[in-house]
Image (cartoon, rainbow, N blue to C red; front, side, top):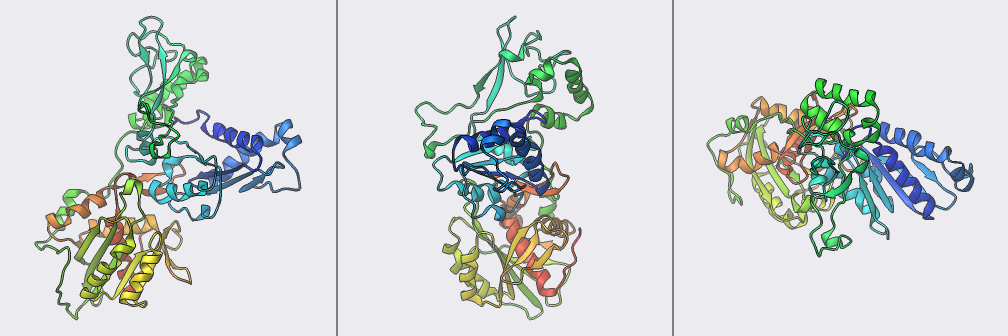
Length: 485
């Protein structure tokens, strides 16, 4: 977990090249959030190390083997593969690897991407994984990884008072000419520091045991680099940033510390104001449908999630037969099972009871469940949606079996409809669990300037997506395909 410009990408490139030249037939997979970041890393980090090393040039490179942005091969059979994934892991499916390096991991969705890509290591006897990035909010992927790690800090002992210092706060330990003791303010020699695990592996727990695996993590702020402490002009830049940056930005980019809470578009108070005085049943048995309405279902199937936090959620909306400004929640249920197939029959029963006109199911983890749902209620009523990143055309049929939709655009537009009072929920007691899922989602801007919606890996958001899938079903049913950019 690093501040900006502390050498993390160069270190990642060095690890990858060393593995590749020292272990024949070793496969490395590099993953960043964007095509631009991946091509930059491949061309200006890995390629430069390899091409400017006489030793590597002489023994490992050849004009006869591939050497391009996305694949570099060495004469010893090793391969370096480069891809990118922000919220969709599909580009990495089917690849086998011995090491995966995630760069700028703070901009990669954890549950949606990391567990899927980590399966690329399933057949490797090495199974190395590196996560590198600069912190953002307290909800972010990198903060989640940090909390599951050894949380190693670089600690420096003061020769004047014998106190130990490490650096996580903008107003502590930053002297006029370099880092100082946080107790007595005497100058410190950064070259004498040692790494200390603040969250050590418990005694008796084998760190190599998969059942008790822990991440070894290092916090690397700009302030501990000798290059910054020993060059007055470089230290002056840090002090200048402390004066000009907000506390949050200084903590993120200079100190490499997570800070603040992500931005939410709607508040709990707003959501409560959209509740009406009716309740919903967990397992309804009767329903009388008006001919003047249309009924649409949405399902977000469980994918397992981090520590089992992902669940299957089914949602039913009602609107007027001609479309209309408001959607009313008829029913929803959050199923505790991590196996979506177990819940299909009950979901199908309720959908048939309410006479749904169309159902949209999550294609990401629900291909089998969607197929079974078709058998229960009819293939002409069940369609799949897969999230991706395609703002040019927010909703697009792939010509085979699913709609491809832009995740950020869909969340933006749905939450704007909610905020404008176009959605009706049952009473607060019935809605609160769904509202919790909705409030777990927050807005961030990646380092490339792209806006994305995140959720803390330990906090589920399935009820939000079940609503969105049903809402997309209404859009498809009435051919209302205009979305805010």
